Image 1 (spheres, rainbow, N blue to C red):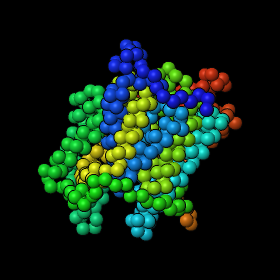
Image 2: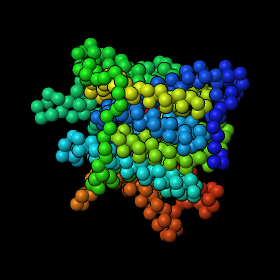
Image 3: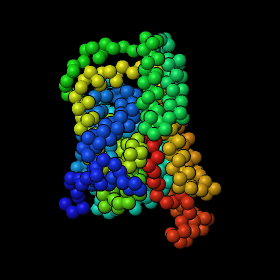
Image 4: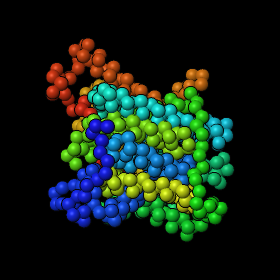
Length: 462
């Protein structure tokens, strides 16, 4: 197919990166160096990718399996032109929790959640096909930065209650921060100190390393149970879970598509800006690839996927944008997914440690929305920006719900619809009534109407 490339030419001597340049996607260093960078990508994606199944109760081993398959599929669908790792998306956390609660049993709840992931993947893949054929301008018009930022903030702050956790009626079994406040507090403090005291890859892995510190504290406090590790096999395939579609919860997952669209487009633009390559023709393929990866995950019990800024951080630090390193990362993750004892060991991370980590993580996810507003210079003196965002945030954070028969929508879905619908309604009414402050010339469009670009600064993906 035209525009696709396979194989890599050696960059310079293959031993160092030429000063002032980057190793392009179709280049590579020597294979030992490429493997080393690929292993860095595994470390970079690991913390966030496994945190999602730990929070949702999904299998870590299964999630790694579909993350690896998704990454390899992404490279194939984009013609080996676009470097990216597809890890677990935090945007799925709230709808997964709602879906699991809707089942009459834990097993059925898990199947319903997987069905929601499947539906999300199919819709995202369809968007990718349309974007490949018609371009992405319609997406940018539908979701300007004020809307995209609002949706991201809703998803992050809607999870605040999950970070604090809950307890049973007797108060003997708790989740989240409440399960072990001391361990959770130390975990939170460790993440903060690592982030501020260390530079480079260590600073970027603050959440992962902070969780390790919290895990050691939990070991000392006898909060870790190794029974599952002892029972697990050394080698074996993950446990797969089939999907079950439920109209009452599928609507909770659909807003996630909007976030995945924004993240993928932002990823493409970030890589293009740094490498000096034009990837406009591959944007639709990127959306399709993430949709296919999420669909496949939904068929077998894995978490929905998205592109990872943690891995863009590795590329920015090493100046190596070679897709060869991502083949190494994908294959390495696949090997880890066939090691049941490894998955069982990760599953032993106690609730207190997760509560400490998610206290920071969920807040950071929400503030990524504010970063979109700031970078795009959204003007909140304009009512058509201020009111849709304000209403959407309150609806989403307070978790407004609406149910009619088998259909049920929660705060994220209703808040998303409110933000998008009110924004476009207010702009249309303003133009009709002549009250809009919008300039007549598109060339001088006001700040906040330009497409949102999620830049390459490392940040947890949603």
